[in-house]
Image (tube, rainbow, N blue to C red; front, side, top):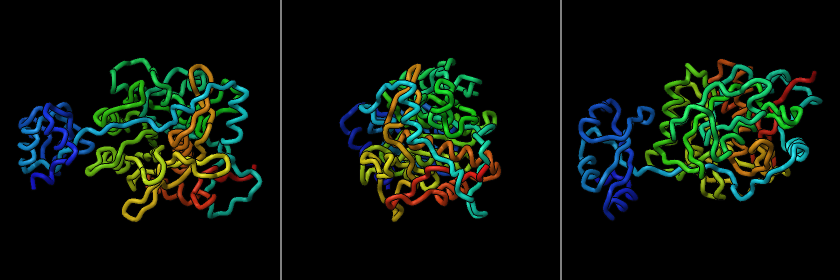
Length: 383
């Protein structure tokens, strides 16, 4: 029974000696504060009903015998899901040309039936809060003008107050979703350019984070969801799925509290779906190229008979924000904010929709291209 409570990888590493950060999951109803009286914790994570601790082998064995302890696992590593070797600086003109090829195309000549989703052409996500849990955000003109998109910045990594992005990934993701396009005369703008941006920095300058920091970000989102008016969260990062998966549990808690969660599937190819995209509560997103062919890097997989990812969007050589101008980037990280932005449009049009209702609509509206579901546009009535 004790061995079932300990992740095999954690046990193996602890036998080598020393201490490791770990998550101790406690059973429902078990007081997290009571847990603190029994062992020294780093932090409490009510969002997953667990505590973060530093353990050696003997302490791990002792904890596994406590009735209130459900499971003990090593802290997983998380990374952003872009192709870091395929980031290319481009001119504004080239950015416009690239985005015109890949931006969602709204149906203006096709009559929309009463059964189809109807998003008026003037809807741009205004009033909807999109949280990008990532590497932060830099003060790019397309996010600051004509009015500042950023309504809140939270740094759970270094606890800085002024917004920054020492990697660039979070800024790119935000731009794909809700950039204003001010630098390109609105030709390189986000799908939901009217939505508000809440940026939570939990990933470092190398695009890597421990699960503790991601959970810090998720916990902050949960605790501040009403104050900051957070409706949708974009998670363009991933980790290897595991038993008692903290990222999946955290994402599911957000969904159960009314927040739509969109996650990139991963960039490791077949049979390699990442967490939290593997959660059935999350909208998992893969990438296709301009010819609707699934990008070779897209993580796919089947878990418990369910095929992942749920839906695909353009994610190969997409123009977006970088430095003081534009860059091109590929990855499921790039595809995910398209879908997150589509969720913002739905939330603006139908504010009472639950996260799972939004997911069902997204999957229903996706078109079948070459045997996969691709969301290229949300149908809009003719004007």
